[in-house]
Length: 316
Image 1 (tube, rainbow, N blue to C red):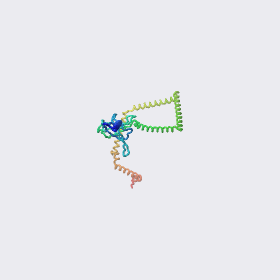
Image 2 (tube, helix red, strand yellow):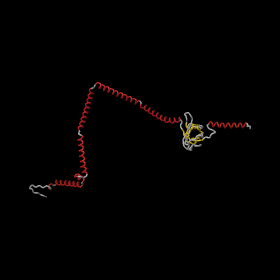
Image 3 (spheres, one colour):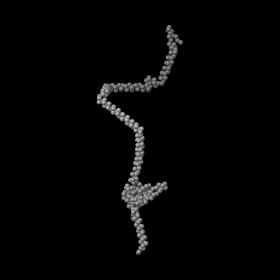
Image 4 (cartoon, rainbow, N blue to C red):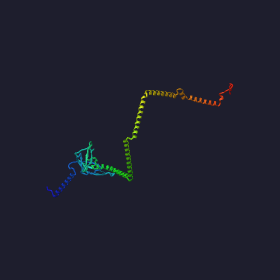
């Protein structure tokens, strides 16, 4: 069977197209002869991630990123759905997370599956939980930011302190500081003079100092003598007699308390006098009558006393 030039040209073009598609897919890392599993994950940030970036499990490449689809919510918030293709030879739990990370300082973004264990197992078409790990530079930037803010606060405080120091060192304050230093120098000079005089007195054995020391010694000897006398007096005290006297005073106090308690309880004459209201009222009445009798006796003495020179009693 003979092929015409047109058929040959068509076959060649078809083979070229198939070869181009195969080469394109191969360059993207896809295999045309195996069936892979597809998984999805949702992210708020996919900075640096692109299609065909590798996907690994524990450092081993098992797939790649197929596409990134942006989705806008009704409230205007944008998130991204990442589609990845994983070799179907790898099985893992659906609890595993799909994380975007940067393996090195100068490398691009990649994705990895952080394995978790337990049922159920992930199946083709499942949506995994997404995670985003800051790159080293971003992490350093996030840590440098607060430090920079604190450094700015410190610099502001240093500026304020410098301004206060400049204000402190104005002309008037400088003059006052000079005067203070001058007075301090004078005070130090006075102390030096006093020290020289004291040393001179001690070196010359001034009799005034000797008299002062002698007086101090006499005062010390007198105090020691008084202490010794007090110690002897304390030793001569008969402790047994002192205790007997204290016991007798305590017994007397107990008896006195008993007498007072008896009076308060109405015992004895004093107790009855303090507790018997009728007796108290009778005594008051008798006292009142006696006062009246004495007043009447003073007013009319002849009514009670009659005298006669001849011995004759005259009665009213």
